[in-house]
Amino acid sequence: MEETPPVSEARETPTTLRRSPEKEGEEGAPCSPERSDGGSPALWPSLLALLPKEGLTLDLGPSEEVDPAVTWLLEEGAGLLLGPLPPGDPSLGRLLFLSSAACDFCWERLNMGPWREVRGTWRKAFAWGCLLRALGLCCQDTQGGPLQALRQCDLGLLLGAPLPGDALQRVVGLLQRHLHGLEVDKEKEEEGAPPPKKIQREFPVRPAMKSEASIPYLLCPSLEHFRDHYLVPQKPLVLEGIVSHWPCMKKWSVAYLRQVAGSRTVPVELGSRYTDQEWSQALMTVGEFIDRYVENEFPDHTGYLAQHQLFEQIPELKADIGVPDYCCLGKGDEDDITVNAWFGPAGTVSPLHHDPQHNFLVQVMGQKYIRLYSPQQSERLYPHEGHLLHNTSQVDVEDPDLETFPQFQAAAFQEGLLGPGQVLFIPAGHWHYVRALDTSFSVSFWWS
Ligand SMILES: O=C(O)CCC(=O)C(=O)O
Image (cartoon, rainbow, N blue to C red; front, side):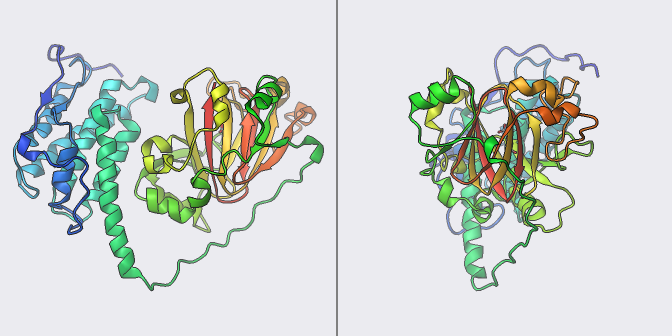
């Protein structure tokens, strides 16, 4: 679709809306224990204190990029925060109205055409809209305002562009502390309630493995040994004893993830594998994901929180992990490493594919079956022809159609089980197939 031509002239300088000093409170102050679930007088000043002291600088770039109507909605909304308005003030209802309209407008643009073509300025406008809407939701005298606000912030974090001073991230931190306090109160009330039902899942089929093809294991090899015998010759390895001290190894469980991340919105893959026709993705909270796909005995689909940069979104979980020391052998900085979360029930499958960077796949919870093929085997693996899936094999590794893909049975491979505390080194370009045998959480580090 054609872009709407610009109406007003390009803005040279970003719009800055300053807050009156009487609104500034203690930065990041925790909420008072005497709070209500919505329109909390304690939450409101703490939220305002998180906004940049120098005011909201919308900085949406040249005006031809974002529709002037959206800029106007955001500026009007942000302007409402300039006066000394207490929560519950009727003009704050207008904040919700204006920011919701801005979010709806931006949402349309974010969902129009391929994602890579969505302009950064629209993503930034959306992030501002989410921030203002979250504030609008918190200043309403409604039940559940802070929870809805948290969801709105997550949409801003997932789909929007970063805001100055990590404003969305900071608002999320405060809302999390506020909501967590409410949960602790509720738990106290519910003490004595019967324990939740344990899930009985059918154990998925364990593959019969040949020992001669197993991936080698090493306990804490030296950096030099790893470099000379595995990194340089591009050989896969399972490393043991290198992440056992990470707090996630003891702390993480489904209950813990629900407690820390339950109300956070994340993208979930729906369907057995991403190569299937009926595969799709949906946004839902981690709590909903656990209820529907991890703890539900009869889910309608396989759900997989896969390849998501969860640790950028939830710093509390990031504090529980580290970066494998061996990444220092790479050429890039630590900031260049992409860290992804892979959380799902038994039975998730990542079809046979390869990635352009080296990978340390750290197993935190549950076991996974892994099959690896070197790049030299590529011809026997029948990669998809289209551009989108050219790094993915057409073959179902554990149930190959050998009439259609006869060479597959001649392809040499390595295999193994990856359990908690083990780290799989997958050299760049190596084909890997992964099936979870239990409820599983893995963290991947892609590095070069
Ligand atoms: O654990 C999985 O399901 C797949 C992991 C993966 O493909 C990766 O880390 O690149």
